[in-house]
Length: 79
Image 1: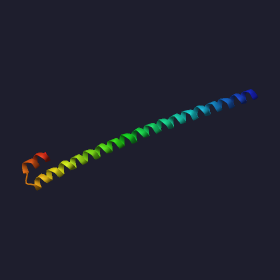
Image 2 (image 1 turned 90 degrees about the vertical axis):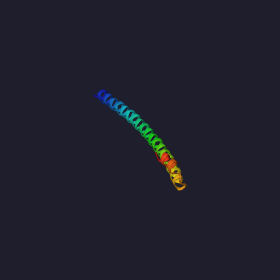
Image 3 (image 1 turned 60 degrees about the vertical axis):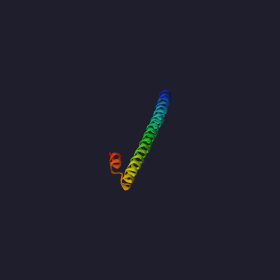
């Protein structure tokens, strides 16, 4: 009976260790995925900001052409 009890305790401890290892691996994997998503979001937002600032610069230069009376050049710029 004592041998059975010891065997069951050892088996339970091994299962607990195994589950703990699986949990740690899952947490690391989740952290890695989260980091990749944050990095992708940051790169996406910075490229969006760059595109917006480029568009704003083109718009301002076209508006300046209108102010200067350069209608045809402004129309080309807006296109």
